[in-house]
Image 1 (tube, rainbow, N blue to C red):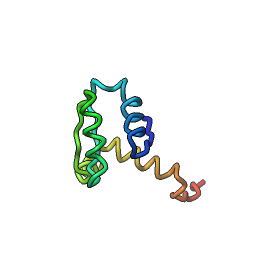
Image 2 (image 1 turned 90 degrees about the vertical axis):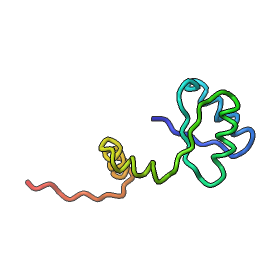
Image 3 (image 1 turned 60 degrees about the horizontal axis):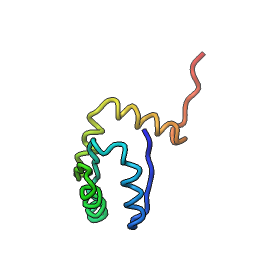
Length: 90
């Protein structure tokens, strides 16, 4: 459930590895962005992480197909203040 952002620098890549260290036995999944993921993937792989670079369209298609993810997206949309409610009928 946590998210974070690191700078696209050597220090940022080092921070990425440090923050993911406890999950090193798992799989790090990165969306292909056209260039930025390549350096991050190589950096993580060189320090022993298992890394997969995936097509963003596949991730979106998966999210649309997964009810739980859809429910989470709807909840986040509502929390973001984008939805306006209508009064409940009495």
